[in-house]
Length: 232
Image (tube, rainbow, N blue to C red; front, side, top):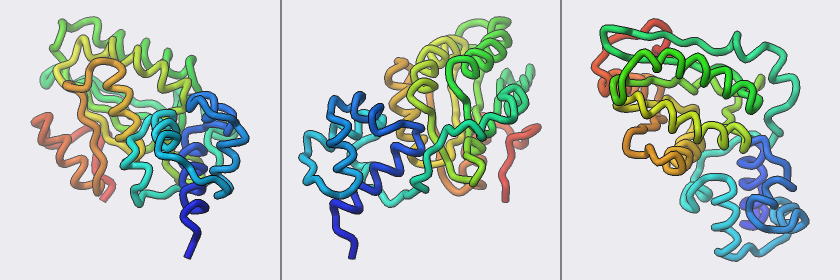
């Protein structure tokens, strides 16, 4: 049986890697030493509950999720090869004027400020034709994966920009529903929504694909969609 310190260290490494963070960046966000984080990931530290809480907050997750069974590859995400295809070719969007439903789908990774601003300009440009609380918004992040098919979450830079984007987006929206690629993403987006002050409008879903898409359709009172559909 794997030593609990080794298992916990592996878990931290996985979550850090899928967030695109280095050990130095995680240590900075947690207010800890890089050598301490390195020791944790190697299974050499008896981590205090206080530091567990700090690491969870730095990863934008709950302490409970830190001990959940969802596991990932420890391969570092947000590598240059993930951005060979331009972001503008990996985003789709559409507006249903009858349902007043704005939808967009992102495949692959967003690299940072530039990509978030590109998406923000498109989406908010559409929203500007509407009044406050007039639109419903459906976001599909199921395809936010690296080339090996492993889910990722927002990098810290993208998450920071997403707070401002969500604040502006939800001024136009009655509700925002996001299809997520993992419970990890649900955790992170709940954190972003709380930071944006729009938690009461945002619903972040992760489940079996058919169930998750069906739930979104039900909440939006739709029966089909141009490109956001169940994969099975």
